[in-house]
Image (cartoon, rainbow, N blue to C red; front, side):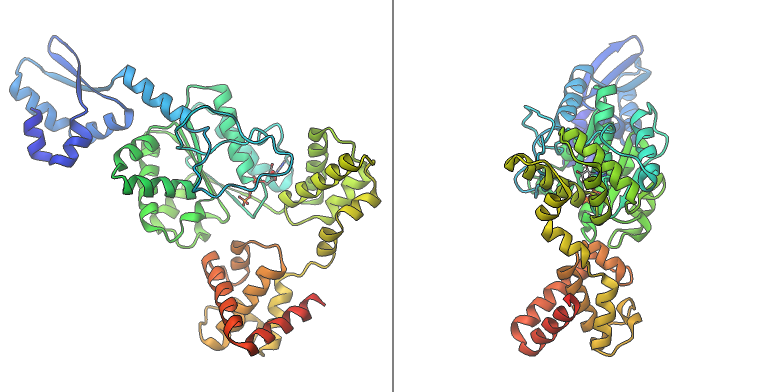
Length: 454
Ligand SMILES: Nc1ncnc2c1ncn2[C@@H]1O[C@H](COP(=O)(O)OP(=O)(O)OP(=O)(O)O)[C@@H](O)[C@H]1O
């Protein structure tokens, strides 16, 4: 039968799907054929089962029932590998996330596989402070973490830089693993997904890539905006996504924008990503910032006067990562010099940060100043017009926004008529190139910078 099938489906498909089939057991009138993973079983069931039954029936008329199953022993080891694979260090090629100060780092693992990315042990629900800006995302994340059955698929979390998307994703993974260690949870960045995919393509090993990704119970992909414009990776992700949803597995995705605002992502993938629950995390409020500072100080076992916490919550408003960094600096300084934390020492230690936040230049200010300087309408900063007369000042404004504010590329792009982060990147590069080769241009940009910095 296998020879016949090989002729019919071709060598590659045969090697991928049919050669691994083994005879599981036979009973009167029936036979069970086994495959090592659920994904392979489902694939063979969908694509080849009918043909197998016909051929089997022709060769063995007494066999009326052919069932395709997952062989327990091999399946268990496949699942175990997938489960273990998630908590291992990222390969060197994956740019590491900045490790926050005092970080007790990641959940340890002895595994050598490198499918997923490590989880930060501090990013739990217990350590996540809930407030108005994030309560919806938090509630959705808890629901996913606590549910035994998929209620909405995928969960799509989005929000600005450093507002807690990764923290919530790790919290979901920790919670599921604690409650149900049997469930395989795979967390990784979209960048790492792409890296793994390219490696599989190069090594002509896409079969095992597909198998690994499609046999997990929960797949979590962080910063999906990274695959914007990466067509092959999107295609693969699209199929992985569909295969998992079809099998009733949970998917959680994060991004810096909502699915409908993601540029460079194919329409069919965007609409798939939007069809579950989309939950956003808004910019922080004073109350949330204060709550987070209190919680972080407590976790660090540091005595920080309430006045200092309130001062920081008022002053550091950009994002939670920066807020946390400021508190870490104040506490570290006090421990190193052996002095209690006061409002004065805090101002001293953070003088650079506070000066920047006192005179925080906004993107709107930059747009206005640049538009005035080049005598174009302010609206051109966000318009779709591409003539040099308006495009160049727009690029300069993007460049200055990158230099003079702490906004991320996607945030800057949003302020310029919802442009993609790659457009901002291109603008920054272009202005840098022009500054190098055109002295007058460089002077113009420098003048604008000085005017903005007062
Ligand atoms: N509600 C919260 N409670 C406690 N800590 C928080 C909260 N939100 C964010 N943080 C902390 O802020 C830092 C940045 O959060 P995180 O890395 O999750 O942001 P992000 O939204 O994924 O950012 P990016 O867009 O850069 O990927 C982390 O140290 C995280 O623990």
